[in-house]
Image (cartoon, rainbow over all chains, first blue to last red; front, top):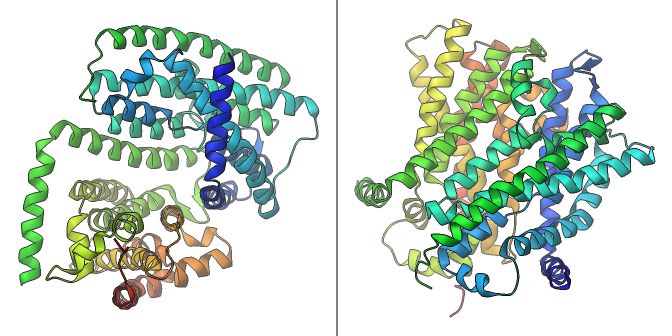
Length: 263
Length: 261
């Protein structure tokens, strides 16, 4: 276990060394939040609420969805693809740790770094510019924290799966890009999933994506009732468990047919 | 003439290299299409809850997005200078560029072409045709000509802004992440500018004139007469910004001292 915690620490320090890159990152996210803020204001027009969300809640939703993304988002799928393509994965496999767990831990180190140096200051800056309401309820914060950890796990698991496809496809840059676009839409980052038509929402219920962004953001904006929150968090936990199955299966398969291209 | 010949030569070479890896090319096109699809889905879902966005209807917004795709596709095919600093300044590649017998900027454009982005223009035409048909837009004899002029104006706006930002590397050697930021600001131009506040509108019109790539020129074809002045300003703004950027580029090249090894 120690070695995994050490890995989180090292990744955290590595990110710390390059922290200047992140100041512009906050600006980029703020620009995105700004664009959606004006867009949503125009969409609401004179309306009080749409799908149970007020303008204020909507603005908060957009802001928290983007800032939470900084925490759960990572590029380990691209890193894995690089390591597999360059053959470095061969060395990784003989090291005394589980490659996939290690990748997850590196992602976590990155996530913790961004939480402190990106999400928190970013959220403060954004709340100065746009009207955003923070919940005063301690339970909301607690549930949000649990939910956001689960979103990290689901997103990372999906990244592991995408990364592992490199073993079979050799070149999957297009797939990684497509996955990112799909997650942005299906996870509820761009707009709350409750805005979709009933039929499509039914489909979403059978997909893991809503656990990535929609659930934590709705909890943060108090858009869910207590029972809905509990149900949503349970669902997130269930997906974390379910996704272990394809990851393990693909991993065993991948190790069997691994071809190191050069090295 | 010589420049056109060079362009043809480079395009030929480019096609050869790309067609060597066809499956990769197909996946890339599909993911581009997916990206454009997501933006359209966003518009469609949102308009399931409202009829007008500040007086603009769903089909008008879709039309603006379709128009935006055409200049944007041309821009991203020919002006991939977003990594100019790392690729040319830090690695000293610009030394090589300067020994070539054509203008340095044109040489970089040739080297960094990504012609597959042109497919985005086809998507744009399809989207415009769909929205235009639903709106019952008429096409006059002069529309195609103006369309061409507006599209070129939009491309020049985008190119001008991005070249100017690339030029920062000539004066400051710090790594900047302004480029990705600009892409995000560019997205503001896809929606009617009157939904933003006055400051952002002013910026999008006169300082980072991305509104001239989407909503302003598209307003002409939507027959929104209140925006006509801005529509017709599109080529002017494009030429002005592009001319400034080429001027600054030339000044920058004069100052260039090489990466030093």
